[in-house]
Length: 206
Image (cartoon, rainbow, N blue to C red; front, side, top):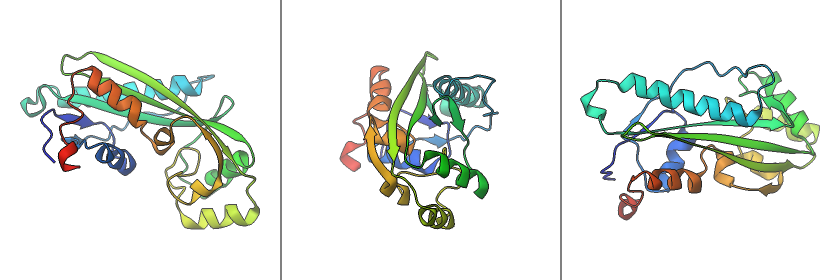
């Protein structure tokens, strides 16, 4: 896939890479940025998603500073936050965290916020936060135990991946599905296109 414009994705998420590939875009480089993702006291989930995506994009910009190979590159970062009300659910690394998140989400609605930050070749910063509302069915003990055994919760915001088994938990979704997966495609391509990135360049080879 020949992409004329260079795009650096400040993420190592396979889901985000797959979503960009679905849209015919192949990043020139993946640059996962390790920043502190701890929410600030009383920080709103939307604000956290915005802050983390911006922080990752700016960290990637600092990392390529002075590298002529990436002069003129676009830098894209995203961060997804799952919340129930103002309560922010963690990216689950331990099974007890995932169990707690699934019990909390069972039978109720929650929100998924993805902050998207684009830094242009001219170093203009563009940001959006996309909000999707998701309602889960009431999960039985058996549902939760078997989902935990699947391992699909590992490293996922809110303890689930909608593109996997947990898609069968969703009763209703209002907003962007790809936002819940990890990168809202419509809004991301609109950001890129609006800043001169040729989003159609790789479509013939997609």
